Image (tube, rainbow, N blue to C red):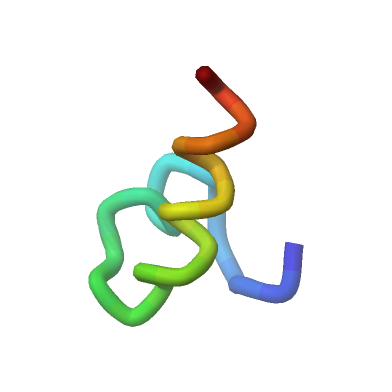
Length: 28
């Protein structure tokens, strides 16, 4: 991933809103 840290941190960090949206779509 482009973001630093664990995937869980990325999901929680508002700065990764775009990535969160992407992950949410992938999980569904």
